Structures are given as C-alpha cells and as structure tokens.
Length: 370
Image (cartoon, rainbow, N blue to C red; front, side, top):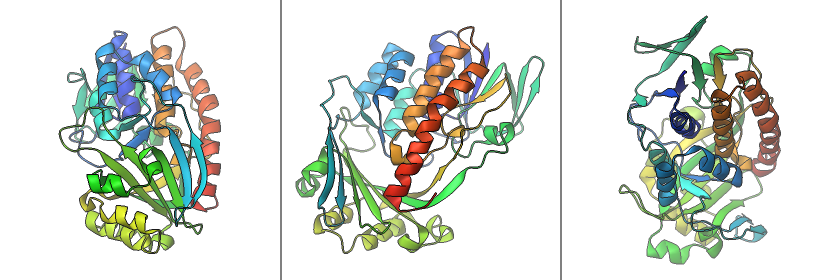
C-alpha cells in the first residue's frame, strides 16, 4: 500500500510515523517550504487521549524525543477577571516524569519529524486529485504529480483536499480573532507573574468580550532557537480589538503587540507588566473557525483527519488531541482488514460531541452567538 498525506501538521506527522512503523509506503507533502516558514501557535495542551495516541503510534526513538522536548507538566486551569480576581480553579495531579501534558508546537513538530527525512517533501501545494480504478492521481500547484493507493487530507482548517471531497461543508468564522504572542520567562517575569500563571493555563476576561490567556512553556530540553516563555493570547472580535481584518492581518508583529498593550491598559498592573515584557516580534493573528456538523463522505480512496474534517474552536482544548486520536484510528484502519468507511464513522461519532462542546464553550468564553 502507498499512502500520500497532505500536510505535515501534528496529525499528518503522527499518522506517517504510525504507518511507517507498520511497514507502509508513505509520503508526506507539505505546502510550506520549511518547518519554520510561518507561525502557527505556541503551546498545545496534550490530554490523556493525545498521550495514549502518541504512545501507541510513535517508534521508541521518536517517543523519547517528544518526551525530552516537551514542557514541564502543569497542574492547574484557572479563570480570572481583568483585575485578577479568581473566578474558578481546577487542580490536577502532577503527571509523572515521562508524561507529555503540554508542548511547544514548533519543538513538537520537529520531534515528530524524527526519522522522516526520506518521507517529507516540502514546498508541495496540493491542487487536485482524480480517483482511478487503481488508486488516486494527485496534482500539485507546481505542475508535478504523484500517485497513491490512499490520499489523506491532513491539511488543516482550510483543507484543499476537503474542498474537493466534501465541497458542501460550511466552515464558520465565529467572529473571534486571536493575537498570539509570548513573554520570555526572565527572572523578572518569573517574579512578576502570579503563581497560577506559572502552574498552568489561565484565562482572564473583562466580561465584555475581551480575553487574555497565559500559560507557561518551561522546557525539559529547550530548543536552540529560544528558551522558556509564557504564551500570551489576546482574544476578541474586530470591534473589541479596534481593527478590521484587512488591517489586522497586514500589521507587523510589533503593531499587533501594540494592540495587546492598548487592550489591557486598564487591567490589573501585573497583566500590563507581563504584556510590556512580551516579545513584540513574536505576535501574529489567527481567525477562529469551526464546523457545526462533522461531514461524511463516500470515497474509499480519499479520507481526512484533524481540522481538515472537524475544525473546532480552541475553547475545549481538544483540537490537537482529536487529530492525534484520528491518526491512531486511521493507522489501525489502513493496517488491518477494516475499511475507510468504518474509520469515517468512528471519526464522526468521536468528534461531533467535541465540536459541539467547543462551540458552547466558545460562546461563554468569547461572548459571541454561534
């Protein structure tokens, strides 16, 4: 069997590792020219679902690399108002030394690429596919092509594979924009930050649609490019942020961080101090999008995983973990006597409740009607 995976994101890479370990001929095609071409996020929460998939799918050397480059485990999720009055707190048992409970996205992806040098092809943007009696013929934007027995769209919320396979799926813009950034964890920042901000994920809100999330990224083995930091994310509608999409997505990182500084100007002094200590060049914006209903499809040659099939808001903290679940389930389908229809049914049954939960959480967190 020959499997072509579109997208070298988390789900696509874990699928590739699992298939390669099972002896399947696999190639991963990624549109970006390199792994660090664009900013895609900073800290990712890994749940027990994600950890179970990683443990089941990754060869030992890759698993050890993921553990080594993961962040120190936290034990807290908490909510605050804009003046840092605590609204709720949830404490978890401290995980064991080999547990992976959160990761830096870039370090995680690089770890997942371990051993895939001969499998990864960068600069390959998917254009279209044609199903044949013998498989799938794949065309790329650069005029080249490839053939495979199975094509997997792991190309994210804007999936081009999905656009051809399930063109009727509506992906909804929920009206919320995020400005991602990071605050280097210098001694001064460690002293300034509330204890909760250094223990886990904390979300503060002004109650009127403006929110700010903070979460620590403290590496077991820091990458060469950067050290420990606080992830900082500002959330709000265009009206709340005071910038249209045309302006927001054309701004420099420094101009984006200036929006963050302006937005929290009347918040608790500690929040302002943390934002002032941020790294202006690290800021970038994203649009929050979701589906309402996870789609079905009929192809036995083309399938989807992760955000390509069930885009969801981050309000349930489950997007990456659901993609990992998909990758483990698809590997079993492709290396056993099960078919892609069974996989598809399992994905719908597993992901639909999570998509719905993330929608409800987003309405509460971001004060929007979806």
